[in-house]
Length: 127
Image 1 (cartoon, rainbow, N blue to C red):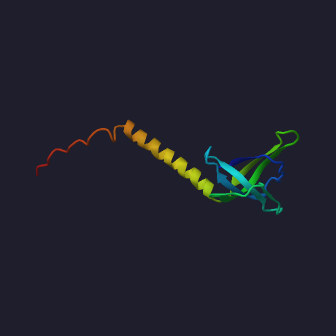
Image 2 (image 1 turned 90 degrees about the vertical axis):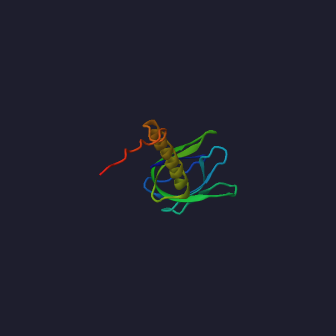
Image 3 (image 1 turned 30 degrees about the vertical axis):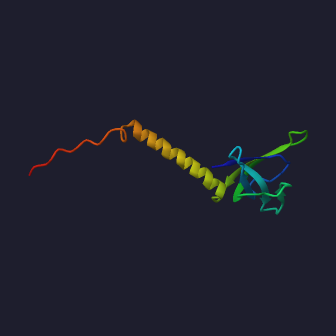
């Protein structure tokens, strides 16, 4: 599943380059925040000025699109990245999705009468 990364910096990374993304989950919004980005093909490293604290995760992906908006206070970069391998943030997101799928399956089973009625007793068999 492709990931859209929005950075509040002007970061130009060529299409097809591999990047290593370091993220941390924001405790307020429960969304991943990019702390550092390394262009593995050119060796250029981009990172925030403040030091990370808490649990961080790293994953590697390939850049599909890079759009740099220049000038003014709204200058930013939007990267569309295809994750190559699983990462901790991807695992957390997958677990949230799995929990939602399990809840949906339970609701569907309840709707079809699997859990709200006692099972019908089988009549006794005589041979």
